[in-house]
Length: 153
Image (tube, rainbow, N blue to C red; front, side):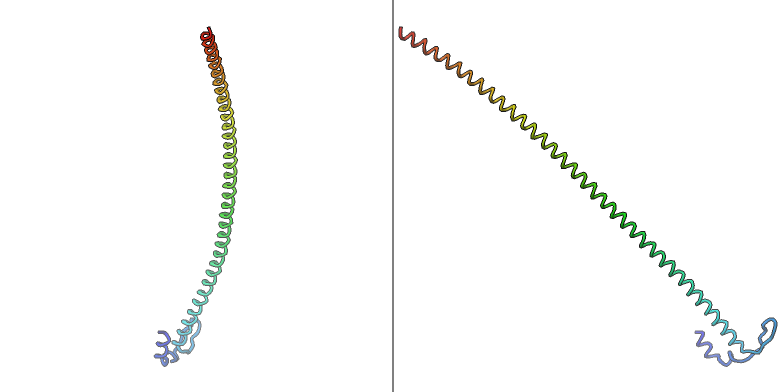
């Protein structure tokens, strides 16, 4: 827009006029002086913009580095927690297996004890039954002998 305005009014912009600079007076084209001041102000703003943008980019780069470092630290801590959790689970599994093995051994010992008791009871029952049968045999033999003696008389 400014370039179009300057192109349309180039004659007026280049026309010399008296310019008061405070301490002195000079003869120069007023439009050209104002256009030069506009270009200088624009250059100052562009330089300021570049400086601020560069500072912003450096700060952003530093923040990205810090974020990467924090992310790496968090990943390391998470990996450490996973390692600790794995070790804890392995220890618990080992303790559980030992507990199961101890319980199994106790059950086998109780089973062997019960088996021994059952065998003892069976043997006692067998001995009792054998004694009863022996007694019955003796009675039968005595009765048979008594009958035989009565029949022989």
